[in-house]
Amino acid sequence: MSSNKISGKELVAAFFHRETPNGSVWLCRCGKKCKQKGSGYTNLVSHITRSHHEDYLELRAKHVKGMKGVPKITDSFWPQKTQKLHCWISLIVDGLLPFSFCENEMARKYMKHGSIARNTLMKYMCNLSEIVENKIAETLPLKFALVFYGWSSDDNTHYVALFATYPDPTKEHRYSKVLLSMSPMRDGDNLTAQEHHAFITDILGVYRKTWANVVCLIGDNCSTNIATATEASLPLKLKNIIPAANLRKLTPLRAKCSNATRWSSTYEMLVRYKQLEEFLPKLGLVEVEDMMPNHSQKLTIDLLMSILSDLQSVTKALQAENRTVLDVRDLFDEVIKTYPQTKNRLGENASIIHDNVVESAVQKILKGSEEELTPDESVKVIGLRHESSTMEEETRTGEERDADAGLSLAEKALKRRRLVSTTTSKSAFMDLHFIVPTSNMCERLFSEAGYGLNSRRMRTLQSNFETQMFLRTNKTFWGMADINRIVTQEKDDENNDTCS
Image 1 (cartoon, one colour):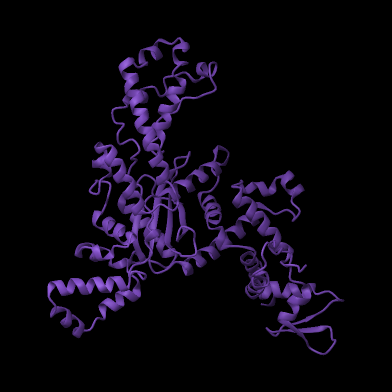
Image 2 (cartoon, one colour):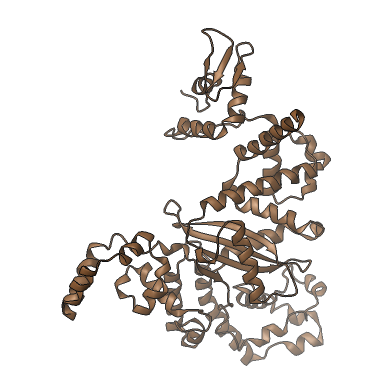
């Protein structure tokens, strides 16, 4: 059975050759001479992983390619310091642990790679973030969408998450997403549109991009899961009225309050009310009894529950990662068909839609009906066309235009249909799955952030917490090789300082 681990001998053979037959001095292809100590290859392998890490990674990838069921190659080739840093950074980032955890006595006791100081850990995390930023800047295409959302932490710091999404046929959902920033606003007391625009402009500059590269901006306008529940003011009156201590004597269930940032908040609040309904009279409190609904109101609540239960399936469907603008329109149309009173909020001309011409055009492109685009829609989405398609359109010769001009209206229509039928397999537009219909990815990020930035970490610097979340969300952009690059650069700088 073949091993998936590259032996030292195989690795050395790919980079070195002996200076003399059977000699102990080896010459690397970069010109570096290394002396073999005994029969092992440790120092030669160390030179390869330190000075040729990119080529080393490529060699490893080729080695395991096609090996079905083979476990990942171990990282034992990397220097001990690199392994230690990678282990600690991964632990702190993935586990959303406090940075001081690395100085915890028990953590140091059971960490096989050795201990590390908090300041040292933060230094390498910041350096790693710069590498990730450069990688993202190189990865971002010329056209991408921005998804943003705001969140206020327990200490009233207002953070804004900014994601970029772009087409990627290799991904399951046909698009990739990267976190560009999760930073607090410069002026927490001034959250105007102008401030957000300036904030995003600054972030784009970090990645050497401008607003010209942004095809659309996706943000959350308002909640729609309570579009038919405006008459449900009664349950809202119950919040903060029920004494929690007395209620706990009767049931472990706790009351739930309305939360404007939670899609299913109203539905979950009513479900909990129905669960608590039998316990409320047993509290023996006059103020609670006065607030209890009468028979007519109970019937209204039951009716509302059935409606919201039906809408709950739509709410959950909207949160799927692979949901498209076209899917959302189909879902909303079905809701409007069943509940016509929601048309003002969910219809094609609803006030929450910033530009219904663009939305209509995107839906037609996703449906494969590009030939149905109106002139206005075609102009609006010209930035979503493939560069090659735009160039072809712009370079149409005068003869072709003259030829079209000589055709009758019917001939032009039939010619256009023939052209469309021959190019249906190759759309003139980008794959628009990257234009996501909601800012769910930001909300999920802030759910994780709320878990990591708890009451015990209120003194954490905003910049340090941003670094932690940035590396956690973009963990596919960094690894052992990047950390080793930082370590190697640090050694080279120290050597240069010594020589000077």
